Image 1: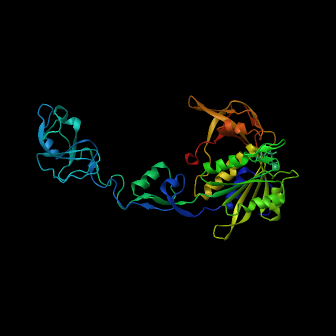
Image 2 (image 1 turned 60 degrees about the vertical axis):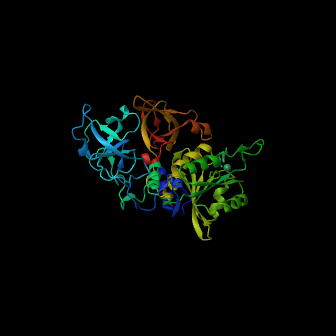
Length: 426
Ligand code: AMP
Ligand code: MG
């Protein structure tokens, strides 16, 4: 990492970043905390699900041959020898001429081979439960029985390593009786805002200052993609302040700074990290977000061992911060979490207004995407200034205007990166 100022494409910048990012270790966590994480073990079942043959209906457990010839006019009368509910086991055996009244989920009594539903008996015509029941229709063997192990068989591989845990997987783990699962751990992402102009939101706002919003939009993005944000606060545009603040984040898995990477007099992120010799400044051919810094900070883990922390120096303008996060920090976080699908889904949409691309960069324009008659339409959110954070709030997508195009006309079909769609949909 020697280059200091390279002109890179979005793909080249991302490749370089991902080249320095590794998948984190696995940890055992309570199943409900695994949501969105990648399974780091093969999960086998030590039980059958369901454990026993059981009834899929409320009705009567019968021997199918005892129902032969049953009709509404000439019901087959059988003796009711027991009633069994889900969670209980009948001690009685269904011998010829007998039935056990059974509720959904109750294990099938010995001797029975099928279920006759209540509505296929004359139970409704009888006053209360009596000693016998009339079967109105024949049933075939196996009717309305859920077989032991039909969902999961004992010894089978139920969830394979690499699966992304969603609500159904948490349910499956619970159905196996698992309280914990081994997953790739979530990265801790330290977030540091830089700028003399910044004030934290619980303070009065003096003239000439602005509230720090980047730390919170970035922290929210970190959470959305599964990481654990660690907000380090605000550093002034001075070396000493920056160094002091960075020290608080040295056990993180990734460091994100915002601001201070441009050409201004006070852009000290640059100076500080250049001195450590481990940072590259890139001019990424994109808009918003041209200046981007990427480096490695020497950190130290929880047990005192030195480690390298990837550092992304995002530009300070609030929209640039968020867009560069989506393009570079998001995939890095997902890779750390063991995810394979790092790409935001993109769709094709008809753009409703022209977008100009004046300087050969890839433009990411904020748009509102709506679907009409099966076709997506994208409408720019108004001013595309990189300080207009509310335009990001209106948007649900970013139209991509390629660097080799001078713009798009209204009615053109464009690619839109869908900000609120999940990578797993790609
Ligand atoms: P910089 O990249 O440091 O030159 O910052 C560019 C502009 O982004 C600044 O002039 C501020 O208006 C804005 N900005 C920088 N950091 C933040 C922040 N943490 N929260 C809100 N706005 C910011
Ligand atoms: Mg600044």
